[in-house]
Image (cartoon, rainbow, N blue to C red; front, side, top):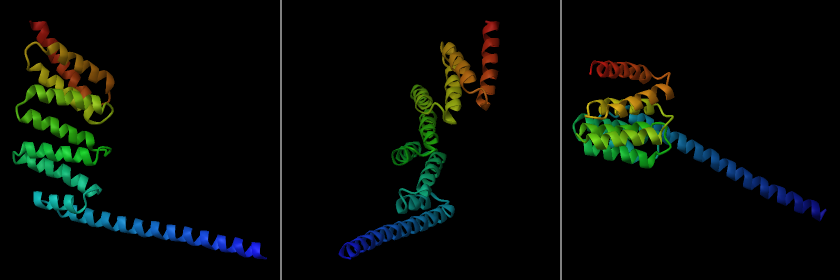
Length: 194
């Protein structure tokens, strides 16, 4: 009888612990879900840079903060604050490195570099982007943009041609593959005239 009582007590204690853990998990899930909804609502109503920064500061690890960072970086670029925009993109990459839009943030940094007039550094950023995210949606754009930029530099047409051929082979279904084929045609036509 004593053995049965000890087993019953052990079962009750284990059951109580499991119940407390489950209840705690449910409460945590509800709190997180509620925070995510509040963050999303705040983001939906954010239209200024200050409002976007509020979303980021109140909910720093949320999906809403990730979106707010990308929107803020774009707004900063739009008003000509390229350095701030690049810093914001880097903040996104450091906080959300596994996010599906991380390649877009890296592309934003490369574009800011190019818009700032640093052509060699911008091309290097595009090369790094294509290497780091080879299966991303930004890889074909990166290859095409590199090739297009190389075509305006003296003596770099062979590099551009190689990038365009690589793009067409690696990403045959990409719209940039079509653009690549057109640019290759133009480069070949120019070479035939020379």
